[in-house]
View 1 (cartoon, rainbow, N blue to C red):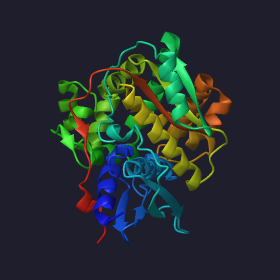
View 2 (cartoon, rainbow, N blue to C red):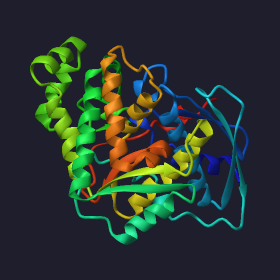
View 3 (cartoon, one colour):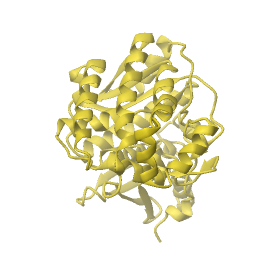
Length: 355
């Protein structure tokens, strides 16, 4: 074990998924077999992360990616979270040679795993595909599938309602404005507009509208401004997929360690999907707004949106059941389809390293 090997592992690990490509981690190499992960969440400026849970899931995905990448070098991984501020968690990672370690078959898919926000095939998942995906999350999690025409239609209605919140609150506008890189096919630290899933004309209109919140308000109020993006980004993709899925824990998650553990399961699911030739799109906003509704969390200056969130929670409960809703940690859609020609990439390793 040497630092060159450690850098190879981290170079793969940086491809772990994160909400809006925020990459909520930095690396500190502290010896040939020890690395410190300096995590952070985006609660101070992202309305979707005000409890830090989505960022914690991302950090869990990073830790799982380190384990998978390390297996290719015959190394086992031990991790421990230091007592620290949950908004800026710190993890110690130790690696050691282990003759019993077998290289993970998921290694080749770490960098090829992609998000597809456009239409996927509606061909149902095979029993073998579903079995592999269910096994990937481990015994502490289960998958709730939403399938068939009726299931996809109900999911589309849910996504349409959730999108109303997302596209009409000023707090989300600030997030969307900062995370989209316009006129781009790739982006190292944001989402390129060509990967968002809008047609070229709507993309140009949205670029102009999103330069000023007053334009957004006018467009939404008088020109039906949310209709086109809600249809293109939420309804049509929800209808055009093999299935929607919810990853649920065996017990209700209560803190950072539970969400970090969930992130490990999410990453194994995602990489297994890639191994099976499937593509994913996260659908996290219904879960996020549902939690805000459960906790009566005031997440916007527009108080009426809390009532909208309560309705989203009720709709989601009808879709997946009360028990799954209480323990749900991740939601998305899955199916086969064309590999996207535009995607988020990652910040280079040297920039992510703390010196």
